[in-house]
Amino acid sequence: MPNNWHTSTRKSRLPRDWEKRRKQQLAMQPICMICGVRPSTVVDHIVPMTDRHEPEDLQGCCDPCHRQKTAKEAAAFRAASPRPTRARGDEPHPGLL
Image: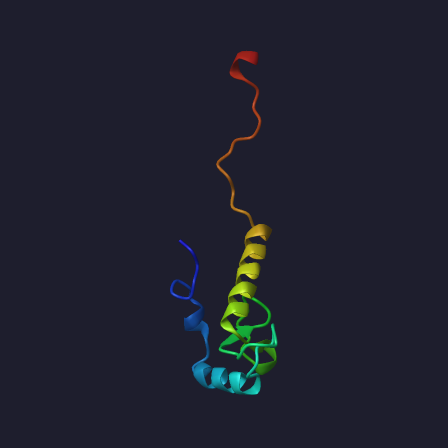
């Protein structure tokens, strides 16, 4: 099952005043901090997978840039901790034992 906002526990870990912080961040950074072109619509945690919600740890960005950044971070996380495979290692053929 893919991990997304609907299956994540991230929302429950946000501070109570998250909506206020979100509005403040978007007001401080109305233009995407990644592409510098589109309006900011999403508040992104600069360092991925952290629960630091201070203004210096957040950035306003547009939805396309946020999706791309999140996809890159998820791919890097998967590459750093690959799942074990069901493939068996090389074994000699039973007839050659």
